[in-house]
Amino acid sequence: MMTPEQARELARRVVALTAADQAECFVAAETNALTRFANSRINQNVAEEDALISVRAVVGKRVGVASTNRLDDESLRRATEAAVTAARVSPEDPEFLGLPGPALVTMPQRAFAATRGFDAEARARAAGAIIEQSSAHGLSAAGKVRAAEHVTAVANSLGVDVGMAVTGAQATVLSAGHDGGSGWASFLDADAANLTPDTLGRVAADLALRSASPGALVAGTYTVVLGPEAVADILDFLAYVGFSAKAVDEGRSFMSGRSGQKLMSELVSIADDALGGHAMGTTFDFEGQPKVRVPLVERGVIGQPVTDSYWAAKLGVANTGHALPAPNTYGPMPANLEVAAGDATLDELIGSVKSGVYVTRFHYVNVEDPISVLLTGMTRDGTFAIENGKLGRPLKNLRFTQSAVDALANCQGVTRERTFVGTEEGASYVPALLLGTFAFTGQTA
Image 1 (cartoon, helix red, strand yellow):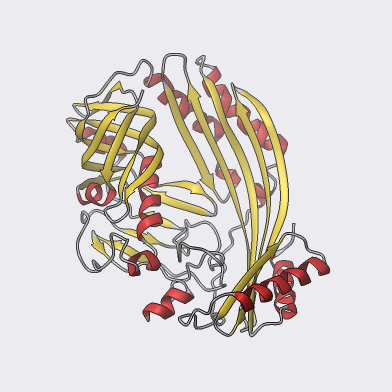
Image 2 (tube, rainbow, N blue to C red):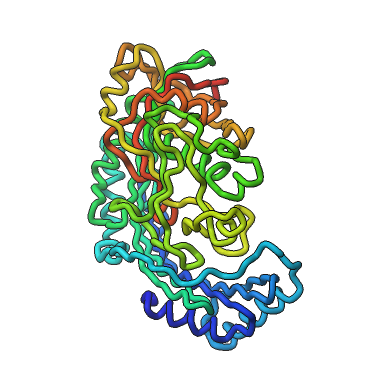
């Protein structure tokens, strides 16, 4: 595995090889090790190491990109030539003002020895501890335990020169019974030392036992408590269709023309913050620009979207450092979303609901209308009726069709505790939420 310094040196060397007006290179090296289990036994153990070198060449107002995962001199030379050739035949973009220059980037420690040392034997022990919690109750467990390290470096001909290593440990478990019950739990952290596999397995097994023999629910609008996994799904889709400066400028975001308007509950504040003490991932984007904290929604009031150098220049606003690898059709995108914590516990949220539904997580969510963020999908692995302030009878999985913006406009409670959900390359830090209205449109199982 190359070090950040080695990745930076490689990026600088590729920039120097590129015969263009301006040149940029990012190096993304990674090691990934994964242990999978199904039917309560380990069935796969894999590890890989790879490195991607991407070159962006600028010739006047024309831009070309080429990439390779071969590190020999001849392959690097070919990649630089391919990028220049692509630039020369690409259409001009009059709004492209050139690559960004260097800027100060904060580099916190985000690579941990325990994650680097989370080898096959350690992952097998963790998987065994997770499985045991299901096996003890006659349940079947499936899931994964994963450890990864990413080294990212960016250099360009204007002097950008940054590199950073980050680690991530992830575990998931689906516990299933023979009577329709199932439960889900996940773990994500930069430091594998924080994984307690028996606790993770117990959470999923408890949900599977409690959700056995589920019953039906009449379609309609209900008060819901969404667990962190379900909240993260909602947040991911807000980001996908709404938080990019490109989507806002093109008028296809719920934020378009609504900066300063109050569209959500005062209990809802959403930010992208790669610099927070709890954040994961790099603190610079794929142009080597520092990521800054962006208050996307502040106490329900719509703020500004995230930008990269192109959209910041085009719109005449600050670059927030949210560039994706070029070329991409999405524009800038947040990767460190968080919902501000509230002052309640999960039990207090559930205890305040006389009649409603608790959702552990969603599955197969899709967008029906991007402007209202109208989503449809299914509940999965732990859906319960809330009856007189307590989790009651388990429910069969439900289809929902609901505007995320409207749902968050009626947020009535937020937990103090927050959880990481996602991957180390794009994680959300989210609480559980109490939403006053949420539309279930049918039964799926």
